[in-house]
Amino acid sequence: MTGTIVKGIAGFYYVYVNGSGVYECKAKGAFRKAGIKPLVGDSVEIAVLDEEKKLGNVEKILPRKNAIVRPAVANVDQALVIFATASPEPNLNLLDRFLVMMEYQNVPVHICFNKMDLSDSDWQHKLADIYINAGYQVHFTKAKNVSVIDGNYNVDSNDSEIQYNGSDGVDEIRKLLKGKITTVAGPSGVGKSTLINCLKGDVVMETGSVSEKIGRGKHTTRHSQLIYLGDDTFIVDTPGFSSMYIPEFEKEDLKDCYPEFDKYANECKFLGCVHINEPKCGVKDALARGEISQERYDNYKLLYEEIASRRKY
Image 1 (cartoon, rainbow, N blue to C red):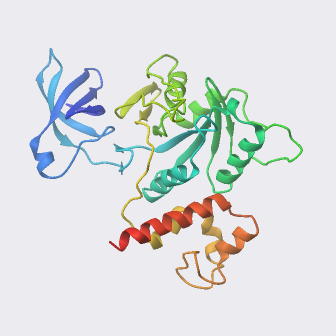
Image 2: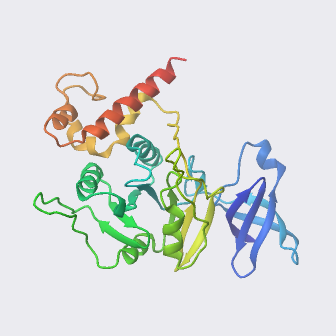
Image 3: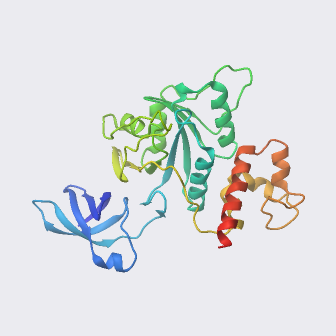
């Protein structure tokens, strides 16, 4: 039988087979010997051991469209990364790390800033400017109201509030997800599970609160799992993360994970310019003109030095 892994816990894999339900399976030892681990989202072949108890073994992992290292999921079409505008304050270095991971793995990504009711318009404008100018679609949400800013968003300095496109934000998010498998990720405490419950239309995820003592969220999602939203639409909910390790690639490759650098790279004097110390650099000139975000560039330099330092050891 062929099915899809919807959850993996402690060596057990829960495989959904259309028309038959969910089977609790163990993976063959051959996978472990080969250094292969089944992932949520994998299409697999299973052997049924007990139909009544819905028990089986994973016999074969079918070819993957892709496999993301962190969060560890397979066969996704896109990623939706969720941060809060406040409580907890968004860690933009952590967000940029996630974006680098997705760019490196060629996964389209959208950004959602939740809890917009806890921040003012100026701060929302700034967040929108940083990431829309970097080439990403940005969404602002609060609880069960989801408002969307698309790539055509422009800030009017005379506006007292951000203007949002679309009268029903939840419908706009559903359109974004429709017919796709989307991995949803972000730090704990940003309201990720609340938004998933809203999209699903009922309570499918446990929700938590933010610790007043440390200002971070309490983890409510403990394992990655595939959730069906209807109309061939799935989301992969993943545990909240508080750190993000940059994958093993060369420091010279980091610039390729910053899409806003692309249109200025041909203005650099030197071929292979990494936009750090080189003279006559098109990216640094764009930065000086305010066409590239200072926050994004500062995080780029920090990540570049991190990768460079790692290579010394």
